[in-house]
Length: 201
Image (cartoon, rainbow, N blue to C red; front, side):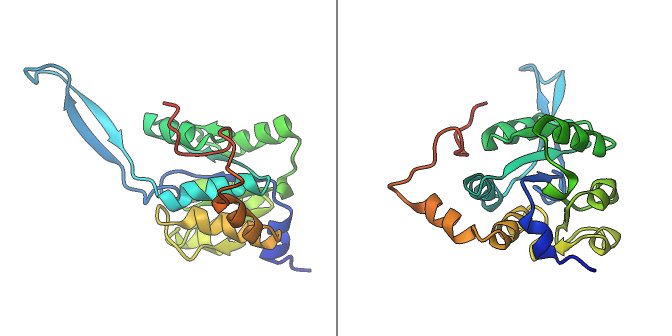
């Protein structure tokens, strides 16, 4: 019997995201910056853009009792900064084979594959998407990635796709309205340990 995307989403306890092409639009800006006043030596700074709607998704997920994390092949200080800003529970960089990180998360927190959602956009994400309980492809993912996903987001990577995934899961679990109301309730502020956008650099 085919299991619906909603049924899969109801079981989720952990949401994991790729970074480039999921939390960003996939663009990577490499900017040379002078290290000395005369400009003789330079270093290269990597710049990425992130979407505030996706940041809010992390707060909504936490209000729904979900844990969040990233697994990415690249190693970047901008990713580390964003992860600290979002206070993500899991941060794995330099992961050529992402199932290794997933296995560590399962062992650490005692969750099963069917309780893990993964959001990806390219073929490197397929091994996790084929194993996890709820595989999500962003709206502009590669076609073969979309073909293997349980759900494809309406929005593109870096343009609210992560928010789409979180809201789909919370809606399936019957918690979306409660989480939104809790997020905007001035009498029920988000605890500092859960709130995003507080830096922590």
